[in-house]
Image 1 (tube, one colour):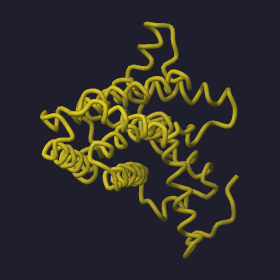
Image 2 (spheres, rainbow, N blue to C red):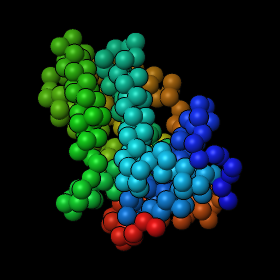
Image 3 (cartoon, helix red, strand yellow):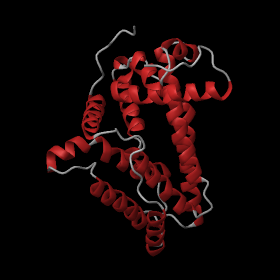
Length: 266
């Protein structure tokens, strides 16, 4: 059931309604992709009617683009904060990598949306990822490499290709989460379990402390400090019960491997 929000709310009420729609849309698109998502479910989850949804967003595609932009802006802001922290360059990079790992497991909507877009991109479908890459990812990656170059110039970090350092550090995180279903099948363990995640995030940062710093003892101290100051977060939007959690995880894994069946919006 939807609430009694007027068709054209104003001020804080309008901002709140729009935010609720975007939050609901992010969850729906994350679980079902653009093709399988339904605006009826989004409106119901947001507590609004469809007329209000289309007042803010002219189509399902426009809502999808807005949801992606909101998610990517959140990611950009968090990474920018780490890159601008008042610590050494090396410690800033460790914070970025740890933040990336934590965001990947605590914010599954982000991970799933990226996977949906990559599937659509590889299939030659029209996607939003190109625009998002230019607006969010390219500036962020350039900033990360600038920070790494600064660390190399100062003598804190080893002399290596900054792009390769970025690929090695962030790519390891991507591979871990992307291959979680395969790892589960191959080894019979749960890579997404709390203890496994804690072990992997710790190992990832400690490894960088030993490989990208000229002074390994210095790197080890920074890695220990970053880990100590950043407890692993919980899932941001966990399902309300265990049965929903199982369905949620299953749908996200399936969505990462294939596109949903095309469904006409009604």
